[in-house]
Image (cartoon, rainbow, N blue to C red; front, side):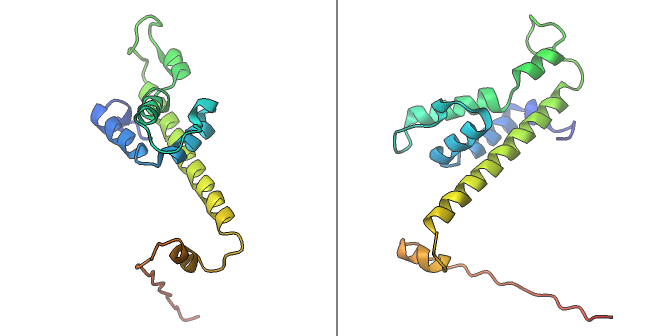
Length: 151
């Protein structure tokens, strides 16, 4: 992240980022957070989205996703005073947050593709399969080809 990126210092921007992450399906978010941070506490046996699960995931994102204890210690002016950091801390923290965000997105993408491929194993037509599940896709993508003469 750029040094001027206020994600690590702007509370409103951080809340918007948290809200965006919380828009993932809680089941998939648990899988992604488990992949990044480890810990079996992210994996729940319960079906559905409970208020406690939502609050737990939000707390994990606030405390672990947007901070790094070791980094804060290494940039601290005084280990006893929280919030006083040497120059470069916010840029380093921004890089860590960006890495976690990209890992989460890639993990969720790979997990959903694996899940979809297991469901779709042996299927040839995705639109027909979705129709049998009750989903009718109305949008049709048009692919345009550009032809350049060979010179």
